[in-house]
Length: 134
Image 1: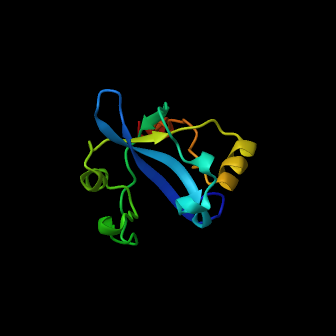
Image 2: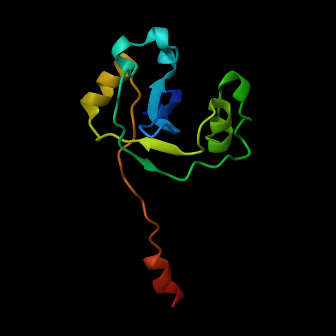
Image 3: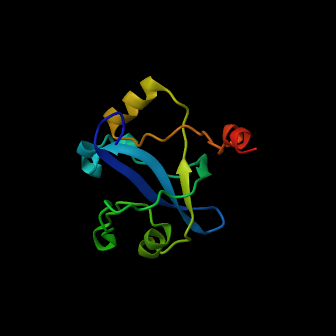
């Protein structure tokens, strides 16, 4: 979900300069742009690219999450090891980030380009809890 709209996270393999391949979560696309033929050709990366991103701990599956269907290329939760075995790459998932820009997000959604999350790091802060504990 993104702004109340149903869609998908686009995860693609990225071949690095050293020859290794990793997975990159490029961001969200709307359900109506899920097939490449429905996207603007400029939405599909070609040639050499640079990815700026973060290594994040993957989301955990809960009791309501359906089972992944790797044989169909459908993953309902990001099982990095399972995705890597399907693609034949290292079990590393980098989340591509982008600046929070509403107009850029609209442009990307229209073209079928994935919309990445902002590069924010949320550290756990239990200071208030500690005050009451002690």
